[in-house]
Image: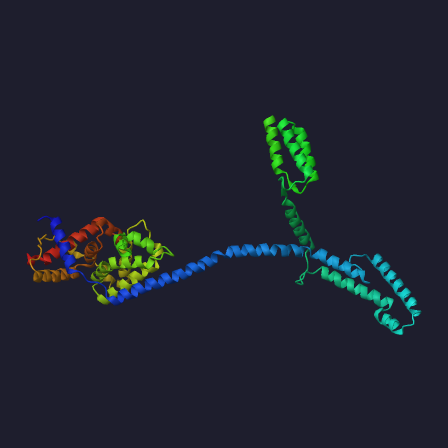
Length: 247
Length: 195
């Protein structure tokens, strides 16, 4: 009997002698743990899916906030406009200089004094009394106007959050946003061009076909001046290609 | 063909791939198939290596919990049995440390240096003899030095090659080969009286 046969016999003997299995209770515990683990994993997968939305939500928030920022950059203009509206009433604009302010006050005072004179002939006492109450004396009006302009100036210097406005930064942001808006030029398509532009566009094509590069270049420059809202990149590319071919 | 039949035909690695794929409705079934296939050999390997039933149960449970919890760490390009028996062996070493039996595990097999006669063995002639042989066989296994016992049982239960066992136990191939050879010789000697 050789070793291989003996090893096989030993293996068989071992397998026959060893059929023991783990207790049923252990089986149950382990299988239950596996089930629980898979169930937890399923929940984690759904949480993970929710997590996948986070970047999109963040992007959406940015998209929604950008117009608000743009509106805030307009705050200065809005406040100035408000100042103008308030000036229609007997209130001076905050940007008006001291000389103009005094003239304005003098004018107002003149109007007031005229009104007083006119009202002196009116028989209705109540109206006169009301006017006397509603129209403060000239010195008080000047003081009130000064206070108001100071308040407006103060308001202009602060944002709605109460923090001081950095006007340079605001201006830079405004220019940046305007630049971005300007950068989004319209694509040249038959549907977007007006008839004159369409004619010039066709002419441009003809010039290129005829090898009239200079004429095409001139026409393109004119078109860029006349319709700045359009994106002429494609035409520039065509012109450059024609130039290379011509050379 | 039923799912059950499908699982019987699937390899360990295929079942493990199903089990570790999130959202696969068959995950639990694949695990059950794997468990049914390997629970006996693993339990016997652990029990015979540790030689203590209570400790063996703890290690066995911990082993399967680790397989479940660390299923994503399994490299599907490697054999499942290599992975799982490596974990089992590490857990047993931990158990030896916990129970203060580390010296027993690391003890050198003094008998390995002794030349052993290689007796012949034969198949049992009847059921009574088979039971007697089985009893003697298991007793002789329990008397083997830990390393020889572990190598012999691992070879018998896992069906792994000597080379794979060397990988699992992080021991030189030749050393494992010697351990196995000496274990077999000792068992044969114990069974000599049944010739």
